Length: 640
Image (cartoon, rainbow, N blue to C red; front, side, top):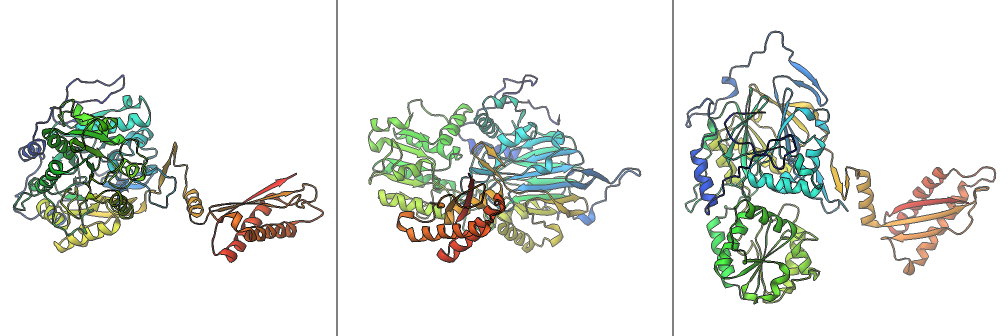
């Protein structure tokens, strides 16, 4: 790796052979957001690149000169992922193009690989027992030494959550990110395996003007607005052109509706350019909320709540939480943080200087009984209705310290993650039953989304003027809607690629082309300590048991003559309550006897596997006819 500009390498707990500096990142001022925007407008991220007129139309592929290969150079090289063009950039999304989460994109040029993000996906409701899902990295098997860097766009779990597992699996390549992002990655790695963070090789993005050289890739950055501090956009320059990847983004506007950040400089980067734009808001036609409106509303709630104020929000909303703490502190209130990720993130932010507060302002959750209700503010996780999160435990009465009162005010300051609608509805119902003062986004602007809406996507496309467009990081139908937006702006079909997970998109000066082969992106489930040991077959069995239960059939037979030694035992779990369905149980028992007798011969013993299959099929069919349900039939044959 070669650094283009003279910036200091910061290694987070590097190994014994890594040079560690004591230089700390500059502590942010009180007006963090305003200063970041000011820096973004003055720092140039496209030095030493050819600049075109801002008002000129983007250069089309037809106007670009084709790159001439050397006469004797081989145009193709063999790789485990298939035959690839030597002088083409490969873009391979391993997740994030058919779901919300599991975000990870591989960029491959010759023998060099750069990766953006390593996120997790939370399980769907029918994925019983699964903790989370991570990207499938089988495409990278045998290419571990080619991975020059992993760049993290920001610290949300759908972008860094798989890092502890995947970094270790891929040989701990160099990681790149802003201070808070790298601190969160380090903490996740340490949580996953104690003392493993010392293996991290981290490069800190200390300034937006920093540039890094990784083989054929030149990496530059630009300021990005999102719902977490230290989000950053990435520019990947290659011999064939440039990739613009904002990560997750939003377009905050001032009171007049004008965007606060200007991305016009991205229209001047090395051509041809590809914009890979997160498109979660492609179906959102609502006007964007304003941070000042949100702050005014939250300030009113903080100052006027008659009893305790309980705010549920994302643990990653560090800037918002810091502002809430400052407002409550000014009113003489005590703040209790609850939720592991909430406390961890705020502690990291305090260490970096992103949040400053008096030592006595923040109290432990078990100290809330020492203060009057109107002097208490509790900030908790669980606004998405997660089963074991703080708000869910409060509603169920399982929380040891917080019992809801009618006089409490509960605020849900978060958006609904797609797929969580039913869970959040149950959360709201539970809160309304126990509390008279519940406030959420449908009643008041108390949250600003971290994702640009439909109009914002239009603005980004018009401002950046990319030659090609690849919508990413959303459900597939959202990507299609984002593509339609580009088409309405006169992008031709050949200028747009709507990706699927595992799709291999090849890019050069002649345009985008989808390869015939695809990378394997089958789910890799994490279940407790098991990673990938739960297959789709196992998950299907769990789904079957959850839907219709299980029936265990125990047949004890004689090894000599194959006859039943005793009456078969029937055990039901999640199927029927046996004491109240004795008739059904006896009919199943009779069916088992009949199957065993049909298989029995006096001359040879019964083949055990054959009998199990026969019991599974015949008893299963009998139960379906009898009850119209399909429980899992688990036959157990014991020979004595």
